[in-house]
Structure formats: C-alpha cells, structure tokens
Length: 211
Image (cartoon, one colour):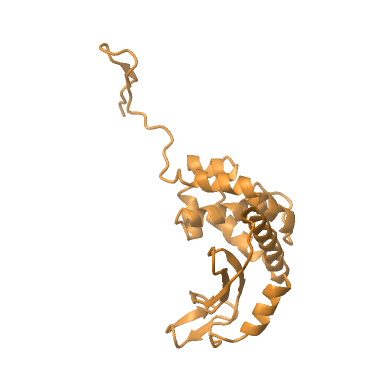
C-alpha cells in the first residue's frame, strides 16, 4: 500500500503534512484519573494490602497491575474483560498501567478467580485507609451514611446467584454504603440475589461504625 511521506510546505517551512496518525487513543481522560491515583496513593495502597493466593510461577502481569487494568478499563467504559483484547497496545492505557501491553481476557478472568473472602477483606482495609486519608485532606467534621441496595445480573451458575422477584432477574443483591455528603463509596456487602432489601442492615452499619 502506498503512503505519503512527510511533506514540508514551501510557503511555511514550519508546517509539515503527513498521513501517519501515530498511536491514537480516545481515552486520554484516563491520565487525569492516574494523576489523582498518584496524589492519594491509590495504587500504592492496593499493593500494600492485596496479597492474593497466587500459585503462578512465571507471569508477566502482577496482580496489582491486573487489578489496576480492570479498574481503569471500567473507568473508560470497557466493563467486559473481552475489551482487553482490542486494547492490548492502547497508548494511553499502557502508560497509565505501566506495562508494554495489556493483559488478555483469559489473564483477567484467571485473576478474578484468585479472589476469596480474605482478599475481599484486604480490599476493604485498603479502601478504609484511602477514605481516612481523604477525610484528613478534607478535614471532614461529619459523616452521613447513605445505604442502598442494587442488583447485579449473572449469566452462569455463580454461587449465591438467585432469582430476585423485584428486579425480575437472576443475580446478586449487594448492600452498599456511601458518604451522604461527598458521595464517596464506603463499603459493600455481597448478598444472595433473593434476600430482602433490609436483610443484614444493622450488622452492616455496625461494621462501618467499628472502622
């Protein structure tokens, strides 16, 4: 295929024409999130707390980078692991995550399978440290806990995925807590899909207050 070389225009030698688009990405907004990440030590805190039971001997992508990739893919709107196969060499995401190429869909799926109850608690502790840091920066004087439940659809035979009559679909029915003033995420409790909305609320609030 013929391509045009870079041309310098005679009327203005500072202007150059080329059909080489270079490495392009539509997700440059991720750089702002990555800068925020650096400012509050988000990735650093995750690395400090997350210790997965990893039996891999040889690997390219660390668990910390895999988690970071899943987070930044979701921020950019790529919620499915399959998207990683099209984003492999994305110039923004590779810089944001700090890797030459993104992990593939199978790598992300195997990463998710390494999580257990303890690793979820590790992430809760990491989240609490980050919240404490942000509250100190804001010099927060009060906290309003906003509780809500939502539904997460499932499409396989996941454990505790049941039919929910209110939502009319199969999945999980997690309980979530947010800071009612700032909207910050505080904590989540994964629950079976068929539990009533208020189930476990008292215990959930107690666990928030204890922290």
